[in-house]
Length: 133
Image 1 (spheres, rainbow, N blue to C red):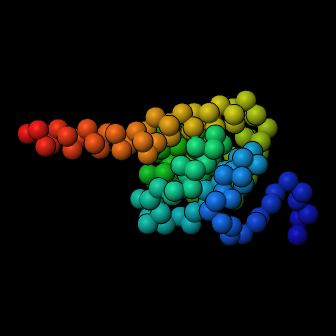
Image 2: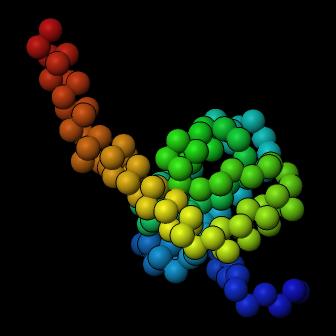
């Protein structure tokens, strides 16, 4: 309706194609309805965006927002405010160095704290300690 040529809405796609879509993005969004249920969850796509080295914008306080803030991987904008979301998008679009640094921060966070091999190794270490006791 607004004839935007810099926004693409593609609908549902195969999970194996997601890394390609993430690589093409400048900023990744995690839009939510402002409900308590969503505040307690961390969407799997958030870690995919972080692993892809992309800055994230989320419009909801909660567990996911805490991770994004801790990792310095993006912006948390006011829930239920389209204007706040638009300002966040424009801010990152016009601040390439910040956007790239946030993407790098997110990637480093995921590698350090959420890599399956690292988590598996940590779990194995915990289980080995339990067995020894």
